[in-house]
Image 1 (tube, rainbow, N blue to C red):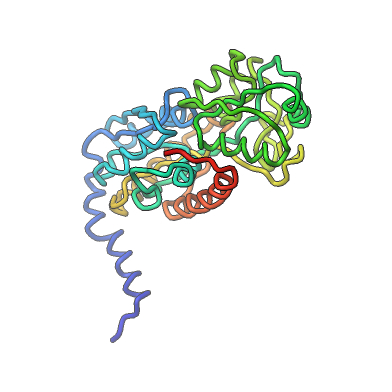
Image 2 (cartoon, helix red, strand yellow):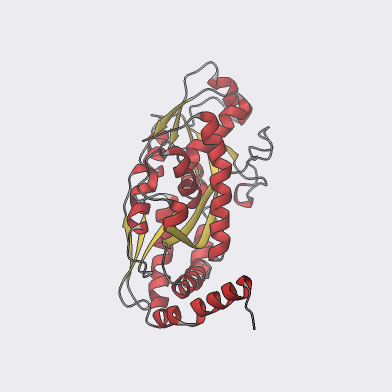
Length: 323
């Protein structure tokens, strides 16, 4: 009897799930789980990591430690996970869209996100908020664009080549706006300086930005989603304001080192989805402008590839490059 290549691959996949890796999954985890957040405290990834850490610990029966490893727009923390032991005990929780952009921005990366990391699951989506300091005399995108042509505006971004930076560039190119980008080492400091008036404009994840809008310390002009967000239903989308079909945001997801057994990825996927969908966590995130969005591992990998191609084109057109 002959066996074709498709049958052989199917048999191999079945063994990967039901054979040796399953034995690994039975004893997993056998030590504390470490969630690496590659940005400073206070940003969207950090908020979500700390929200799920306790329910995840309760379910796994092991401590879950959130460790911030900021630097190089998230690449230092991502590199650490990519080079960690592929045993599922060290995971990366980051803005998957930002990670997908990195190969287009950085000419010298010490790791290849597509080859050295595997997706586990997406956790949440939070659209970007285009917001300004309350002193800025603009109440919508059209007025902001007009103002940018007569007044110097500093645009705070989490880092050069970050998802908010590239989204800001896309809006700038679509509208003819003129502003100067001021890069930070994370979203929390970018928000803090815009609240203080040191920068005038910011594009940042809604999860970390909405509290400052609700308190009146920032003024929101638009949401980077194709449809309005019920939580701020009075705020128009950027697409409504002339940036056709525009959508961006922070896609918070979890990845592990390539080579992690399929059964461990499946276990982490199930546990993380259970934690993010728990009523308390879901209610907390929804109240701050994030939508719980989960995926299977292969689905997340496909999403990563699509984001890499989409935003890579914007980066190339704008000639955004770093060593």
